[in-house]
Length: 99
Image 1: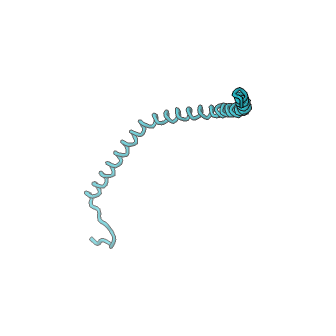
Image 2 (image 1 turned 180 degrees about the vertical axis):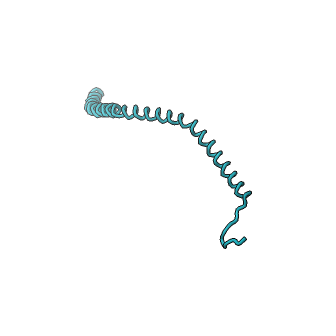
Image 3 (image 1 turned 135 degrees about the horizontal axis):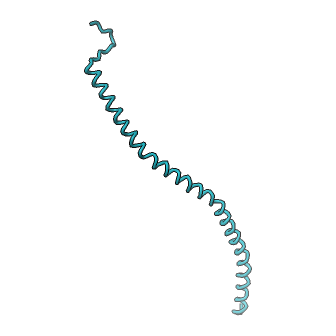
């Protein structure tokens, strides 16, 4: 039999071995897909829970911003009040001590 240059000859036994190897690979992939199908619903539930938690946090952020602004206003208001009071207390103590 004349075989052209660069050609390959595959015997029926070699072809059968290749088919069996491909079949084994397909079975392994099929098992992986089945395991993923069992796991994925749980992941979907987890993702939904995380999305809901994120939505709740995002809803609370404006409320926290308002609280922080209120505290900052109080802080500056108290600083404005404490300054003159401490000056007055210092002057009173100086007079009492006799300075």
